[in-house]
Length: 120
Image (cartoon, rainbow, N blue to C red; front, side, top):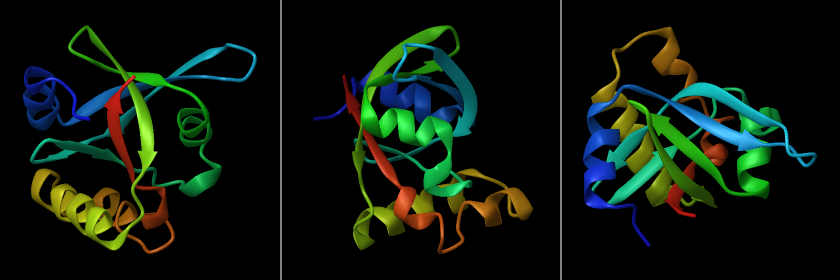
């Protein structure tokens, strides 16, 4: 299931979005992240690996992407298969400037944190 076409287009042209997650107690957290689009699929991953708070919270329960004042409810689907990881890595390389920040998104230890976003 894909996000609406207008949301996909917005995410594709926006370099940084906020990911909004909830703790088990209901506390809302929001942090900026990078996001990539490939076709109708939207992918994210965390450079901090699976111990990242937002990653753990988003895998456990739905959250939202907040971009340009628009809140898009999402749920995360693990996408650590080789095809999705490659598509995501290629998307990061295409969208973001080469350098240490990009490199941190491409190290082998973070590749398994690749997530595909679907409507919540």
